[in-house]
Length: 339
Ligand code: DAH
Figure 1 (cartoon, helix red, strand yellow):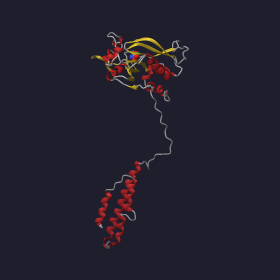
Figure 2 (figure 1 turned 180 degrees about the vertical axis):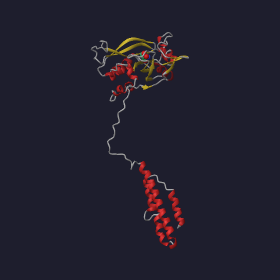
Figure 3 (figure 1 turned 135 degrees about the vertical axis):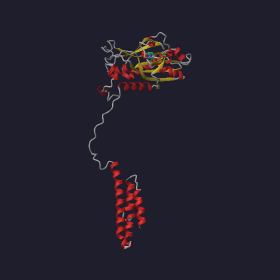
Figure 4 (figure 1 turned 30 degrees about the vertical axis):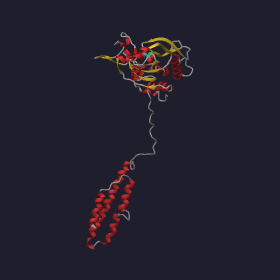
């Protein structure tokens, strides 16, 4: 009997249970009426009278040991599952405040959505660029002011490395790597060497769109512009194109939309003209296609680029550009339910 007691004592030391069910199985195996410890108590009556005292003590110790061990394991489960804690599960929880999305992100995503519905996919490029992708491949003349340190951030020791001043550099990168048809939309941050004020910042955001394929015409460009303007600012929005100049498009244009604040009647925002400028665009200059390894005799394309801050201002009337980068929670909170 002593051997049996020792054997069970060792087993008790090794008790483990992964959950309450396993623990209950152990209890049944050892401590229930038909369990192993109880069986020893039944054998007790056969123990010689002079050993009864000692054996009785050992048996009681064994039973207590098993019970203690089971209690100990049970306590572990209880504290893990939160029972016996002072948590009031019936109490009403604190409201978790809604996070807000930055207005520039909201507008950026809305622009991407609109173009995505016409088959454009997102492409991205680096913010630290080289001269070729940012200027040379895009036909900028050697003496173009954008190449001037006054306007652009250069890396001091590397005159050919700079912070991109526009997202048109992504056009170059994609065209170099991909043959038409190309239909991309490129959102991103750009940098210019400007004094910071309510109307200018040294960084801001642009979205660029590019479509290159066979037989792309100015009519296609005009159509996507109208589609974009009406999706973004409402079905009544009118557009107007004014001739302009960009080194990488020919012909080039700037697009105005009917002022969405006064509905075209004239107000301080549109300087009483009824129109506000929102983007630049044009047909990709054949020289740019050739620079990027695309045969300009076979393919044509259009491109357009716009400032996200500008579109956001029109949509939400943010008067001071600096608000966008100050992370003032009171400002951001105003966009809690937007989009
Ligand atoms: N890159 C021009 C800028 O930053 C914007 C622009 C104009 C982009 C005409 C274009 C375009 O793709 O066709 O001012």
